[in-house]
Length: 408
Image 1 (cartoon, rainbow, N blue to C red):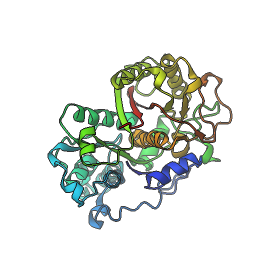
Image 2 (cartoon, one colour; image 1 turned 90 degrees about the horizontal axis):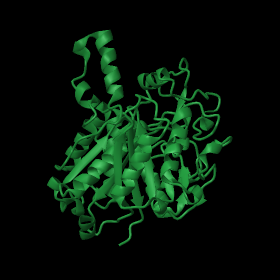
Image 3 (cartoon, one colour; image 1 turned 90 degrees about the vertical axis):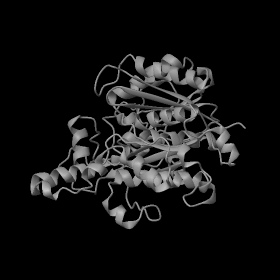
Image 4 (cartoon, rainbow, N blue to C red; image 1 turned 45 degrees about the vertical axis):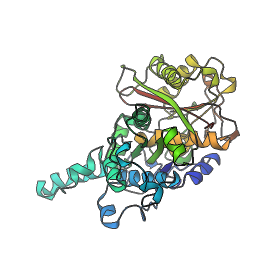
């Protein structure tokens, strides 16, 4: 696993801070946000790509691409196949692919290009404008750097992007088209046009006086989501291939599902039909009964409609909430859009491997309708039998992935 997050670029340190219930939310200082009604986010500070991207390219790249490349290479290191290593040399590159998506693409490059067009004319647009703005370039550049020549593309389904990529990558392996895939999501949209766009949608919290408590899924006083950024990727591999190279297997991907609400551009179905169907389909794909699931990393964005719609859907599948713990990673790192599912899948796998589930912080005035144990404010020890991770996106895109402990 590999990531770039508001809590740094180390998977263990990231999860330790989640377990501690820390908030990564603070004032935006990347640009002057003083005139915005929302002036805070889960902004990454002090990011360095040293050792992963050469300086010349690093200066040109959008952060969305930088996060993708760094997280991807770190994931390969963790998987025992670092670039240039002997194990990497043995990988059949024609059967190794990359599927890292993004909801927004190279938004800074795109925004700067438009500004140059308006202020200076078309001759001042960089030739990197189109290549670095399009959503497939993260996968492409990572593939070029590591030499993977198998399936390589991106999926963009807003905030469901990462899970769609996991699902598609796993299916390439299941169909025998690849032995190994790097999959996940990347996002870097905390810039004026990104924040301004979500402000226009009236989607963001405006709790400027206390940013660290702004992201509060399932709390009655929630007032919108908090933007985040970063990247989260997994190295997904067939069991046969992983065993043959003696890979450090940390968990098993059992299955997943994707579908669509076919209802509204931004609002979820209040009846939860799309989400509940997606959960059921994911469990069928995984060969798992609902009774076997005892942990759910929820989409839980801290929006008025979304939080309860998700819980209503979960209740349609899991009739007895007593043995299930649910939590909200976004309460601490914000909503990382296309990267959210990647970072949350990593949290799900870490819950499986550590036996601890992180808290949902800022639970002060909980919704009675939730009924499940949301792990309020303090971590809990919990042996995960089967864990699922939900991600939903604008457009009604639903996705669920299912993980379990690896049992040789």
